[in-house]
Image 1: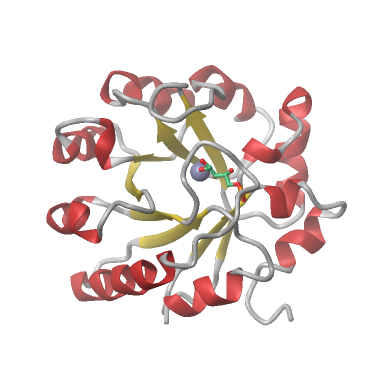
Image 2: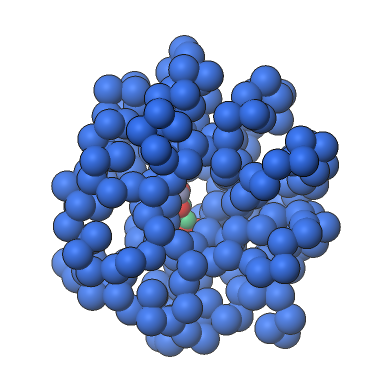
Length: 222
Ligand code: DX5
Ligand code: ZN
């Protein structure tokens, strides 16, 4: 189990109305979101294209929520300074996006941002064993990255539990996020496995009432 008394909910803007992003960001902030999750896709690392630093910069005028940038781009290193300058507070990268994960995490930290690592469904926990001292966030993908609205991959629950044990062993406060297919039906098992931050696109922006949708993901809501 996680030891965090408060579960964080980070709505993923990928499922928002892209013609009204500022309004959508304000709406989830008012609805009780903790972070705003921003999916950056390049059409190369993942088979979809979204938005870049300029959109994050524009969103900063609409919300005070911490900006949780999930980079699905390769290479990532040449763009990290731009995301930091645009106002991303957390910058998470996939180990497969470049040859020097340790250096990438050092770069993010040197820019005053919280570094994170994202593990694809097929990526083993060993990919981050030797950088645990450099991460503030670990994100488990419970779908293959690129699209919202996919089904939760149940085999990731064991990975979440293993990562929780690894985090506890460090004695450091590392947030364990889970991204993909999070709904009121899948969230309890994810939290029981030890996650402390739920990322949800469709389950929040696809719902008629964002406040109810966010509340429905928190523990004890059902
Ligand atoms: C997928 C993204 C997710 C996505 C989740 O590549 O990383 O953040 O928005 O969408 P849902 O919650 O609909 O599975
Ligand atoms: Zn994401």
